[in-house]
Length: 137
Image 1: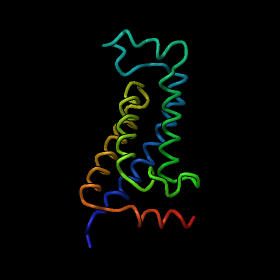
Image 2: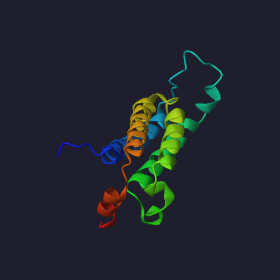
Image 3: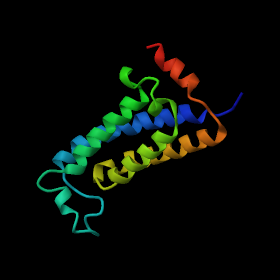
């Protein structure tokens, strides 16, 4: 009793981050602003005339939701049963999402979820309990 299950907590944070990533990407299409706009002027091509980073954030958010729920075609694949692909993917997504001003918080949430998955992998947790719960639906 009192033992923290890191992978379930990381899953909930990743679901929250995926939802906020999609919402932030939608807002980013209408309000184009880079997080580093005052520092780096050379990345303006990513935000004008179309905010490419916001479109990528919408796609990334749906990918995170598809992995964490998971969808039927992703069930029992390596990306849903192992932590290492998630860790790598969430690091890449959070590194790209931080450039869009509306997606800074989801990028931090994904980074925290990545650290929690690392902790779960170090502790030797398996994803079996989590996948059994999700496969009933």
